[in-house]
Length: 257
Image 1 (cartoon, rainbow, N blue to C red):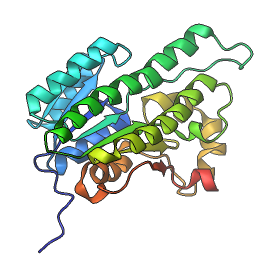
Image 2: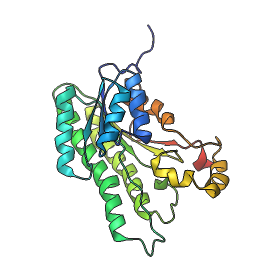
Image 3: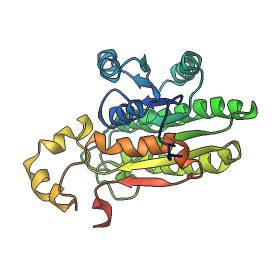
Image 4: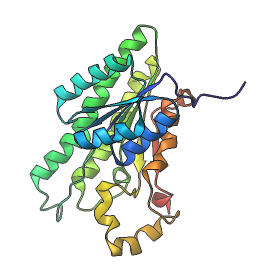
């Protein structure tokens, strides 16, 4: 009998910030593996384009994850539309730094925390409610994933707000994993390195960065959204049913070089 846990037929995955970048990389692979996919994004045009490319097993919702009520309403709507939610990737995030920590703007700090930390908290909390209720009804299991960053474990100068949110996501995920294991729910974080997305466009366009930083990546290239498809399928599949509380560093070996 063939080993087939990576066949995601019948599974439903939700990706916040899933219309572009790493989130779309998740969505594309999950769809190809047979899952139905819910996309959350704040840009309706990007949402529509993502659904057009992903096909009929996908649907998008316009959601600001920093808004607690929008998150709760949309989570219930996704569960109602698809009948269940098996995995949730809290991926939506924004950048935002300052000239220095001493001059870091408070408004930037608050904005970054509202999306990158509050948004992850609201998203995973509402997803956990759904999965716990389902487990109590006799259908245990589920996968909760928080997107962190190498900034969680390395010094990110002039990006203290961003780094703080990503470090917090790693800790939050570990707490979720311990509390929810009894329901068959696992929780893991993903820490991307230098990935070619809209958020890193400034660095991609910077000749000095291309000359001094990317050559330090042992794989000698920028990461791409497609590099995250495999981990998304794994974490949604039954192959990861005993894998929880972990942090997946996907950086081309940059952080250990």
